[in-house]
Length: 335
Image 1: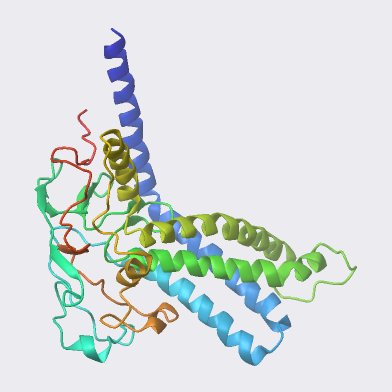
Image 2: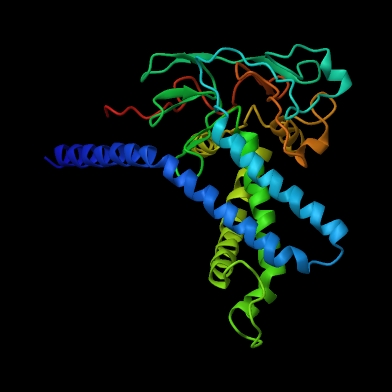
């Protein structure tokens, strides 16, 4: 009887979870529209209120506008670029103005498939069949229960901010969007506090700006909150990237570490090549990738791999400390 009750409670929670997934998925465009409106309001208040009061306008104005351009561009990219599904055709880098140019030494290499294979130990990914959609998928892919498709290098589904998954092809833009959001909100909070006092009537001075003082005060409060909250999120994501992990893999690897420790073994992540090389691979910069300045400009680049082969530690083809049959898979909705 207790076991039957437990199963029924679990099924009820599963039903609620599916309902919440459908609800947030349907409301995703509304959340994105709201985010664009708030970002645009904050930009208008900053340009109209704060920017004219900054010293050295010949220097600060271009820097602030570049930060804003990166913020909006990476948000547009992460919302519109598909994360990369298992059954998608191979992609090739574009040639327009929005696409970064690779280094001279890397331009002669194939535009599709695996890059960096001359300098790193890159091997083909093992494949498995998804129990939910039946697709044959490479390792590091996971099934998204909201999109109902398998995503290459799946990180998580973000219905509130971008209304889609974060995966192989848009994860770079997602992280850079958070970084530039932290920088922008910090600048707003740091340089705008004096204007907050004026808006509150602290100096008994009239409000000299076109933007309503209430709008500026509300966006200032939002900027402070976002700076604190998104700093933690961006820091955590960069920490995972530096460790060669995604959000899903971080949880899985913690489980593997516990199992390996119980046997007196040590878990080793075969994708962890050291924090510096992990960051270079993630952002696809370095001698065989794109120039470092692509981190400062709102340009598009392709990942170093097509998701069907991965760079690994030399001599390690799979995680150490994990035995066959112990690998975690996507949750089965029928359980």
